[in-house]
Image 1 (cartoon, rainbow, N blue to C red):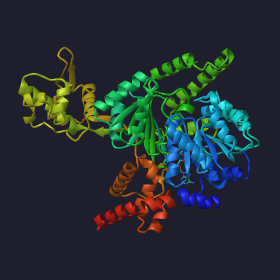
Image 2: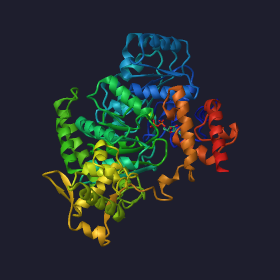
Image 3: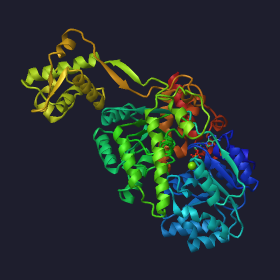
Image 4: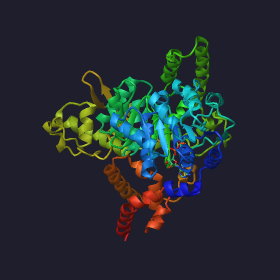
Length: 611
Ligand code: ADP
Ligand code: MG
């Protein structure tokens, strides 16, 4: 089989992405390799394809259990025998996998670096043919990168103990020179083929907000993205807790992740997220490295991270499937203080000497300054990022908050009239003003006991804004207060009309609101590109439903079945036969065999409904 056949037959892609072929050819020719590609760039294929073509079993060193689990599920899903060895397996499963490995059943085996020096493992490896050791997330070897993992330093020692030195291939998305140098040196790479592909992720929209009130902005951002999967990063555990609580109370399917939770709960929450049972994740930066979820459509930073490396890596978890996605950062002056604090007190890495620690701090401070610069720049955000990573770029990208105006004036006169008249009617009926909670309930047609007891459901303004999200109505109330149509009386905690409200109610005064919103990608902009052409959204939903059904049946995350990009391609090209189905990007033989019938049926029904 050739590498092209493997690409097509197993993975269902018809062309290699930039850099993939060079790395694969190098590895197949017996050379070490260093692949530096952005998140979502397709690093996995660079070692998975050689693994299939080389004799014996390829060892993949990967830092996190969740990461291994997903990768192995995805490989098995396309018919490639692969397994992982880690502490999540019980004794029996562990023995079974070991036996399979000895029998040569697997082409790839994923392990954590801590495993390498366990005697039993070493013995087993010594007796196998290992043509290739692939080191994923190789920046973990560098103390200059994030996520330094001391056990990565032992990989070379392990490799040296094997009877035959395998090819060593390292992969990371972290680009800086210092980290690259560390990887080369500490893995003792021998004259590696090196590929550094561009860092641009054209499908990502970048935006920075400087809100007065982060919380209410966040709520409306999440509200506008209901039904989509997103990650919200916060700088502290306490903030994660409170943001997550608030989202849950507002009925968003959110879960949380931080280092203060018990491992069991972390795993559960991560699973809920991966499987889209709870598609919104609120987390500290402890969440992430293992996240291969490809359908994350937004990443919101509630706080500014401490470096652009961290930011780009975290934000880059959006849109891995190549579909348009958003990376939004909510910047507040307090973030700078918090980041400084972390830099000064974050020396938890005990392996560093005093001098090294001082160096790290100085470097972190320089990084922080660049990060703040990103939040404050009025120039193109993408250009700023690419310049930081040392890549050439145009001055303007047309697909970031600064290239596209993010401030809109919306006329909300009608809504203002509804709200003000509701305040008036409640007051007329009860003889007193009420607080914002009750007002909100009446406007949104709440069936709460208090509303019914007071007979407020009989008002003509009851339920006028029932189709508007709660956070949006709250923002209207804020605007009406700011503009002095409503007055918050503190003693009884009520909202009252001001004399000026009459201007809106009776004399036609217009009310406008400034909305900050990530706009749809500009037509023709990079983000709109996708695989070209609009997608019938009803059909897309039907395809997603079929995917979800199959995923539940198999107990795997939806994107293990097909990515959103693959479904979009299906919706556009509407294959009618198995052969046509195979031509869809992301459909290989195994998946065609397993899923063609179900998806073709969905497409057929979709077509009938059209007629
Ligand atoms: P990385 O590890 O670099 O972050 P992955 O290896 O997880 O990225 O790949 C990201 C996505 O890109 C996956 O959904 C994968 O199917 C897709 N992909 C990889 N190579 C290709 C290719 N040659 N053509 C189309 N899609 C690809
Ligand atoms: Mg990867």
